Amino acid sequence: MVEKEAISVKTEVTSVSGKEIATKKVSSVETEVLNDHLVLKREEVKDKNGKFLKTKEGDHLYNYFVVGKIRNRVVKVDFEPNDKGGYEPLNLVFDFGLPVLLDISEDVRTDFNGVKQSKTIYKAFIVDEDGKVFECQIRPYKSSDLSLLNMLLNVFNN
Image (cartoon, rainbow, N blue to C red; front, side, top):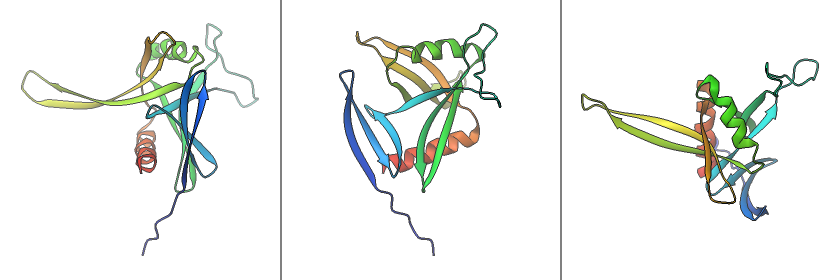
């Protein structure tokens, strides 16, 4: 017999620079949500000595992620840009200083043979004070990150 675990979720609404952010607390780990989108975070990459890694141009390297809790385990879902050149626009999105949101949508296309193909599109985006949208396509880093993201969304949507 498998016992189901009860997870208590507490929602708090706070205001950051005039925008309301709903934070769902799952035990001690917070999963931030703004307008029904997960909030994407970034942190600088450090080497084994604790120094920040830099690119050839001297810019800092970053990891992009969403943190949550699944069955009393803290999980971190890593993301990366869709291509090598995607780090620059992704850093531009983060440089606004606003909460960066994760948008997950489905794209269905029909090829010339009439076969429908669908794929999931992940975007990191912000909406600035003027209402302009700045976005960059991203993807889960590994297939295990995709699995963790699906589990996190299942826990979060219940």
